[in-house]
Image 1 (cartoon, rainbow, N blue to C red):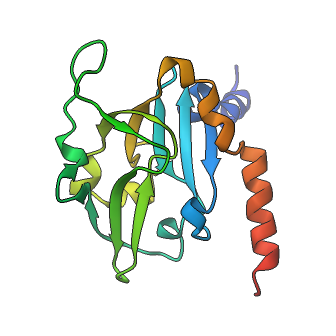
Image 2 (spheres, helix red, strand yellow; image 1 turned 45 degrees about the vertical axis):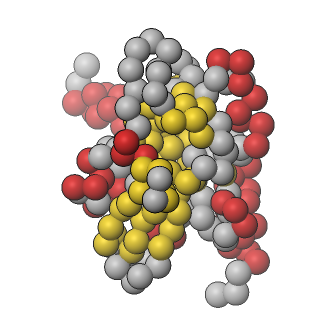
Length: 180
């Protein structure tokens, strides 16, 4: 294989995310315009919660001041301790359960929600130390949390979510309706 063929093969290789995960979206979370979330669903039914590319945190060159997994006085997602095959100790989440609050440098606060029902397996503590991971690599090292849906619900959790094509349609309609 010569150099030209090799570079073409490299350019067409899908990323790990595109290869092993299905992208699902929740647009305008809780009625807040553009606050879009992305769920990456693996074939083993694990779901990774990330920010969609259109989320305001990732727009307009914003920087992150702080990330807080303390949801209320009695509930911190950082206290989630999971053990064993049946994931004992995992916090159970509903579709609209808050995962964390992100404060931007312009003092706007955004709440990130789970979007799906299931057990919280892990929150990304790395983004507490390095918040820029969320801005630079939102689908990989900058993920928010990992959730395991119940086995019997693993097929139905995507009913309230949008496919990539449906999400792109929503985003294009949104950009048409907003004045320049």
